[in-house]
Image (cartoon, rainbow, N blue to C red; front, side):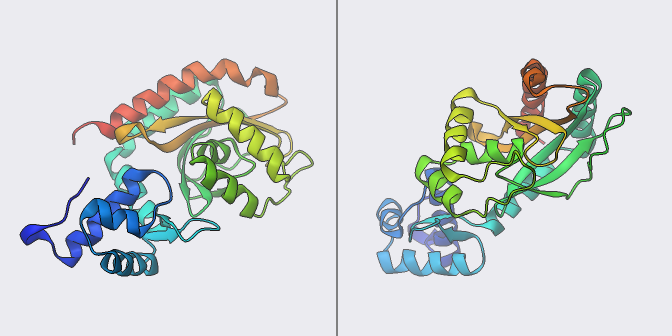
Length: 257
């Protein structure tokens, strides 16, 4: 935790201290709590938080005045992650997994309540699935998206699900907030997520977390498979290989550069 005070107690140091406090808390926080923890005057903490909010580094939790990480800070973190995970070694791990499973695999991150795919490998087998880095996908009906949602603190998870537009993409898309919350609870306990033709008809998939520093999930590793080649019930057989690949990605991310 960054502490303010002494000669380093300048606006920039205070702002970084607030960001650090919000990140480490892992849940929506009040600036009164931040001020107490950091030794700041409450008005000063609130003023800096509002300035950080205006720049996108913080945002208000859904349905609350408390602060959480903002989209700009997430984007910055993802850029750091992308720079740390050297492109060639990262892609080689994905290629190895795709070769072992025989299906397409993708690495996705969460940005502004969407999944953004940063890397992927398409196999030679016909799939007709997009696999381009930079592609966006919804969170409520993809395995990577549901995995990220399941990792949120309970109150934030419930508020977000009840606020998100749960658009129906296929007849199997979960559009009832309570049903989705129940599934997210199961995913959180199980440790991996699956999607059963919820985003694209005829396509199933599953995802496992990629831990970063302090074991926090920074990315999701997913496979997507046409049901013509693999039934939804067969997906769990791929989890051990996926978790092994995720561990290798995590080691790549946390290794000293």
